[in-house]
Structure formats: structure tokens, C-alpha cells
Image 1 (cartoon, helix red, strand yellow):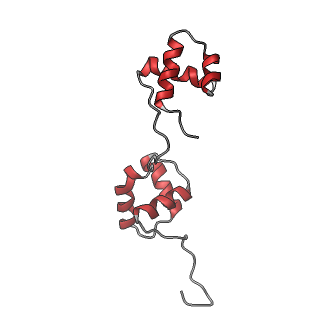
Image 2 (cartoon, one colour; image 1 turned 90 degrees about the vertical axis):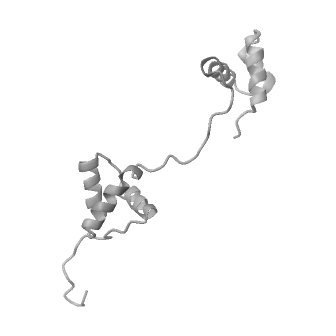
Image 3 (tube, rainbow, N blue to C red; image 1 turned 60 degrees about the vertical axis):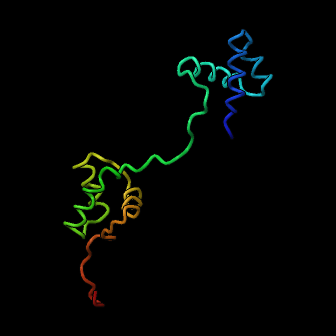
Length: 126
């Protein structure tokens, strides 16, 4: 749903300030009563009626830890996701899921060990 135009918001606030009820304005302009109240409150507190920004990317919680992750992987390339997750939790106080960590490492172009170490196969060379 698109936000109401700024022109509509200006008209609603002007009429509300001149004494019209929120319910009457909501019916007249086909918006909710709550929207009328919200426009007026925002205009009084912030002095603007422009629509707030919507959507966009918040960024990753890993962005500020990229250097540490690079250092850990460079120093010990066989770290698993679980080990990296543990280091982030203990040393950096960042708690996140394995899939979030995996996606972050992939986005940063960092390589890591995919599986924990296993004993060598007895039936085939590894």
C-alpha cells in the first residue's frame, strides 16, 4: 500500500486544526481515523508531513566484525561454522544463527570449512 500523498496530509491537518473531527475527515478523505490522528500528531511533534522512509536494507550484524572473521579464518582455515559462531559469541558478544553466519561469510567472500573433522575412510582414500 502506498503512503498517502503529502498534499492530502496537508489538507487533512489544516482541516483538523480548523476544528473538523477526525472521524469526519477520515470519512471525507477515505482514510482511517487513526491515520488522521497520526498525521496531526506527527506534524505537531516533528513539524513535517512527509512520508517516512520505507523498506531498505538494515545491513548485517557481521559488517563490523568482518576484519576479525578474516583474521580467524586466515589463521585457522579449518574453522567450522559452529566454531566461528562460538568465537563470535564469546569474543565479540554477537549471537546469531548458523545460516545467518553462513550467508554473511558468503556475502563477504570468505571461505570456511564446511564440515567437522572426521576420521579417514577405511574403504577409500580421502
